[in-house]
Structure formats: C-alpha cells, structure tokens
Length: 299
Length: 314
Image (cartoon, rainbow over all chains, first blue to last red; front, side, top):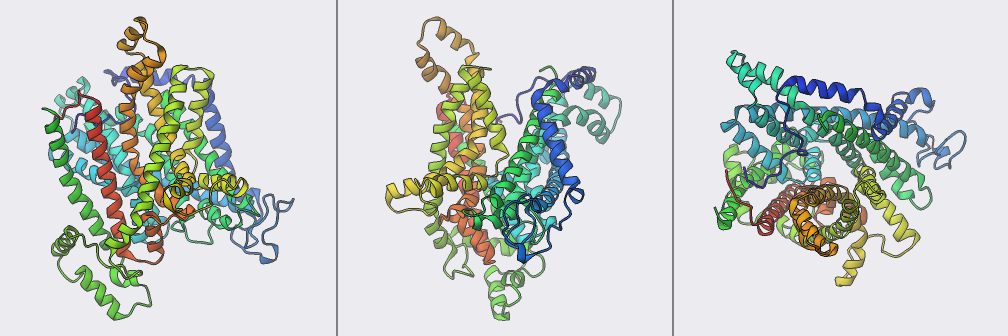
C-alpha cells in the first residue's frame, strides 16, 4: 500500500470500542431522524417517486408500448398530460413505466456489487496475506478502466438485455465496497472484542459474520446510498446510447434519445425524462446524506 | 526513503496493473457467447471472414498461447485490423486521439476554474448563505445525467442564443476553443460537485489548523493567508480527488463526444459497437485504461512534488 492512498470514505471517528456504544448512538439517532429537513425532504421525494412507479397501472390506462400512429407527436392535453411521442404513445405513461423499470434495475444492480464487494473486502481485510494481495491487485486492475468505458464494453460483449447490465455493473461496481469494507475491517479486527471472540474459539466465519460485519457494514450502506444514484445514471446512459433494454420497452434513457430529434419542436420529450432522473437522484442523494449523518455515531 | 525511491516504487506498481489490464482486454473476446468470430461478424458472415478472424485472433490455439500472441502484437503497437474501417486499429485510434485529449484538458481546466472559487466562497463563510448555496449545488448536480446536461446547454447556448456551435470539433486553436467549450463545460459541470465537496472539506480542515491561527494572529493579510497557507495545503487532497475521478472524467467523454459529435476515440468506440467492430472496441478500451493509469501516476508524482512529507512505505 502506498502512503498516499486516501482512506476509504470520510474519516469518521474511531469505531466504538464496545458494541454497546454503537447501539446507544443509533438508538439516539433514530429518535431524531425527523428533525433533519434534508432527510425528510429526500424521503418524501423518494416516497412520491416510488409510489408513482409502483402505481403506474392504476394511474394511467394507456399501454406504454402500443403504437397509435394517427396520434403521434400531440401536444399536452387532457387526454395526454405530456402529449405523445413520434409513435403516438402517451409520454406520461411511458414515463411512469420507464421509471418503474429503471428503479427496479437500479435497486437490483446496486445490491449485487454490494454483496460481492462486502464478501471480497471482508476476506481481504480479515485474512490479509496472499488473499489480500490478490484481491487488492484485482481492484487496481478494475479501477484502471474508466467506469463507463468498461461497462459499455462489457454490455457490448455480453449482448443487450437486463442480465448483461447486472453483470457489467457488478463486475465494475464491487471494487468500491471491497475497498471500504477492507479498510474498516483492518481497524476493527484489532479491537478487543475480536480477540475475545477468537480466544473463545469461534470460527473465522462466525467472527466475520456475527462480530465484525455488523460493526463495519454501515460504511457500506452509506456508500451504497450514493452509489445507487450513479448506477441509475449508468442505466439511463446505457439506454440513451441504445445499449440498455431493447425497444419498445419504456426506459428513461431511450426516451431521452428518441426525443432528441424533436428537441426544437417538442422539447418536453427529452427534457421531462431527464428532469425525472434529476429528481430521483436528488431524492436519493438527500436521503443518503441524511442517513450517513445518522449512521455515523457521535457526530 | 527519498523521493527517487517513491517514484521507482510507484513505477514498479504499474507492472501488475498493466498485466491485469491486458488480461481483461484479452478476455473480452472470450466473454462473447458462442463462437466469438461468428457472433461478431453477424448472421451474414461468410465462412471465409469467420476463418480470417479465427486466424487473426488465433482462436484455435490454446488460451495461453493466444494471450502470448496478443501481448506480442501489443508490444509492437499492433492492435489488430478494424473489421469495418479496414485499416489498422492503432492508426485509427491515433487519428481520433487529439479531440479526446483536447476535451480532457479543457474540461479539467474548467473544473478547476469553477470549483476552486466556489469552494473558497463556501469555506470562508462556513454555514453562511453562500456556504448553503454552494453545498446545495452538488446535491442537484450529482443526480444529473451528463448527457442531459449537454442537451440543456446545447438548447440554451447553441440553439437559442447561438453563441456556440451545436456540435463538432472546429478548426484551428480558436476554433477548437470555441467548439469545445460546451462539451468541456458539460464534463466540468458533471465533475465539479465532487471536487467542490472535497475541496471545501479539506479547506475547512486547514482553516482549523494551528499554523493558520498563528498566521492570522501575527497579522498576515487574509488574501495572502488564503494564497500561501490555506489553498496550497487544501489543494493536495483535491488533486487526489480529481485523479480518482479521472476514470469518471475519461468515461464521461465517451458520452459527451457522442452528443456533440466530436470525432474522438469515445465516438469511435460507440460507432464501432454499432458496427460490431470488435478489434476497435478492444483497442479503445485498452487506450482508455492506459490514459487513466498514466493520469493517476502523474497525480501521485505531483502529489509527491506538492507535499515534501510524502514517502513510500509498505
């Protein structure tokens, strides 16, 4: 390791030496969550967005993929709140279904690298030695590729579709989690409670799962909250480039791309889906920042 | 260990990364489902073309010898032949490289010009109105798709106000400077939220340091205090943050070049994907990785130059 590697995540306080301390801090934090305006705003935005996405079939009676060429490129009206696109599909409907799809893929796609990164990071941090060296050299290699370049290249070789997106984002995204968790475990494994657990004869797996992980995983959650914004952006970008979910399925990225040709006459086709992405990102960022403040004990 | 030792050690660390990067790029062929040659060439491929590709990649040899062949060619600067364009991939990439480098340098300069003053504004009046405004910007900026931001800029400055061209690379230095302004600004605006955040945090750290209090109490004028004492120390973590995000910066150019129709290697990559021109995609991926590794090396070395305390220890 070089001396100039910056520590993963914000330099939080030393991990609590007794687990009791952590519990007290969290209990205290949980009782005042509603006093944080940013967190509340974020949660409200998220609730509205997720609610709209879940209730899409109830809110609109149109089908997101059925074409109606006689009604193409209509302006906003009572029947079509945001007008229709070049194939006569209701823009508002496609927006809701696109949001639904992108949120679902986003949440799954952030979970997979989270799990892989946590497992590899714990192994590297706990066992050290050759395992640490191997995993961290692997991290160095993945980091050498620009995020979007590697994802685009992987989706290209794996072929289009949801499965390729999951695989590409997992192969690229685990790195950050592995780094964070490894760093946390390196500190935590020197604590007295780990020595106690070890001298009590507990197995390595049990020490890692029951004693170390609960104490270090909050840093992983904090990172995941900001990571999901990037993951959703990546999915939208892939859709925009035509490498995401194949048409005619509604996806915010492909909607932005379709609307691009009508930017000067029907600006709403491109700007509204983009605005929805910004709102989703804002909601997730606010919530993530708020949760990060709560999860950091003693701040 | 002195600085020379640091540089040598840092260079040695490049070797495993370089080997790893070539292995990843090499194995991309083998991630393609089915017969890679047949899949790449599509359903209309003639058996002759498939056989040619098999021969070019040595697909019928054992894996280790295939990799060896790949490495051997790479060391001779040979990245293979383009399927769609016909010529050698190396010359194709070299001819598309200047616009991308322009975009990268221009975007980095704009990022610094935007984020340093804003971070100073925020940090000097902690928890003031200016601070809150500057801190709110990243929240919106982080969730904004870079390509969508590009559209907004095109719509505002190129279509409505007609100040800048809608797309293209321009000709001559001033032409480039004008044509590349909007794309570079797009990349810079995507990057500034992260940089402002870390620069503000590190400035607040430095402002609380004892030597700043000492300087202030001995009557150093505040503009001099910021120039000589605060900014200089706060800039080191910012350089690292900029370097860590260089992967993002370089990756973003792929998308930005597509929107602004800039003939760089990012656009070459996307076009080649739609032509299913695998050797070009492979070559561009490798070149992008080399760029990131070199920039990180440069950042580490400049870090050592900025901070005399940097030592390399294992």
